[in-house]
Length: 316
Image 1 (tube, helix red, strand yellow):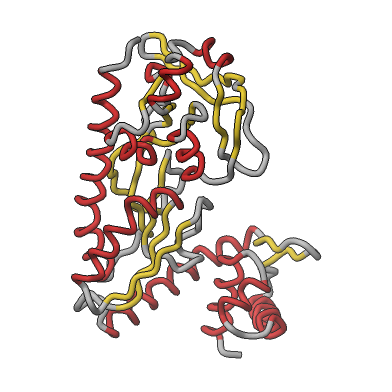
Image 2 (cartoon, rainbow, N blue to C red):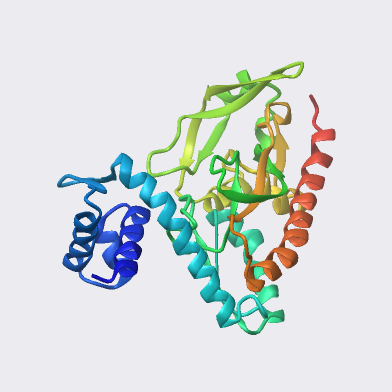
């Protein structure tokens, strides 16, 4: 038995959460994956996984073995990458993930500018509202919105965003501007989350330094499955829409949408650029961090300037 090969296979199973997933990641048959892990367990005299027809989980001993082996595997990978040159010049494959809307509006233009400058780096964008595990998916860095729970990641704060409510000037002229949450019941609203329209909006009540989230029933005049489509419906004057500040800022700046009920906007959500913690950072990633961070920060600052200008003009 090739001990290192068996350990690498075991780590792949633990990281991917199953034998089939590890098989796809390694490009070898499931039977080979299972055989290598079984031989490793036999050699160690320890059961590493608890297997059922639907689930694979590490045993207590397997968890300790995985933590030790994964550090060794990562250290060897770092050594390989250093030898191949990724630590001597910015080159290679760079994988970046971000929420769909933020990625399209703000990250993608920055990545395109970066790739024009660094011709030996190939960039890959994974835009999804699903939070992807960076190590398991071989992702170099990610834009994350909200509080971070994974302490194994290095986080660089870029700025913050809010959830806001907007409407077209034509709608507000015809229907009046809502001044409090009770007024929402008499207005048409536009829903865009999922296939089943949300019939309530989460708003924020504030008293001094304390804020409380409340669910406010709304009348859904029309619904859609994408925020871009919902914003177009709002611009057409069909009702109020709730979206993130970075999604509406350009429309607000152009006068197509007007923020309302700003006193009930959400508290700020942090936006961070995160990457796996490791001793050595490939130059391709360091180059991207140095290039992207000030540009993304500037974009979020511009969003905040636009929204803050209209917060000061709010009739409340």
